[in-house]
Figure 1 (cartoon, rainbow, N blue to C red):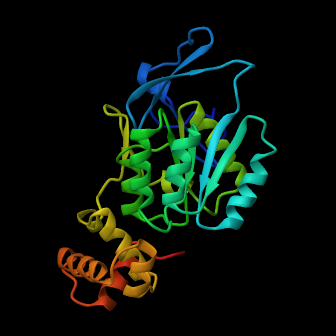
Figure 2 (cartoon, helix red, strand yellow):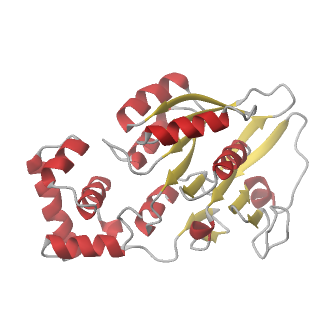
Length: 277
């Protein structure tokens, strides 16, 4: 049965489920009941951030400024083209690497960033953390092919406005952008069913942590590349590191996980969902 966002569901006040994922209306979570906003303004509290935000509304509101980051140019071109037909959204820029994206986003000051998890260079999660300190009220929606618990956990800890899998219809991405601008988060159904909401902190989390949470962000990136079959030399090039640094990370990863050879390490990473689908 297809559920609309307004269909009553057994979630706390302010949360509804739909066939495109979990929608969270933070204002209702904060107040415990829907209340009328002040004229021209709406009080928005993001459940995974725990911050109160205000957003002007009205017929003269400017389009939502969006920046897209993905290492596949075809996806960027297709998504940009699709969003051009949505008058409420304006794509102000695109990038296929984290280093280029950082400079462009700081300069263009978008409201929402749609960010792939797997990118050349620095971690997408490190990029998101840096942006939160340099761009006012920026909101991040992750778009990825990975449903790994450890990657989802890294996205949730600082807060995000969505975690969507690339198997979703393109209309779901558009709707997630519109909802993020109103303070709502959207998750793919496969992600939604694994989340737990703390009603006190209004934060989402996973019911249990992956052993991979012991790794640093850089170690996790190295492990993901190893699991996908990359050599030490290739990883060094992709991550802009020396081969000696990659070897050092590999040793520390194996030590932390209690794994003693690369084959066993690759099998472990596959079980944890770190390989491409």
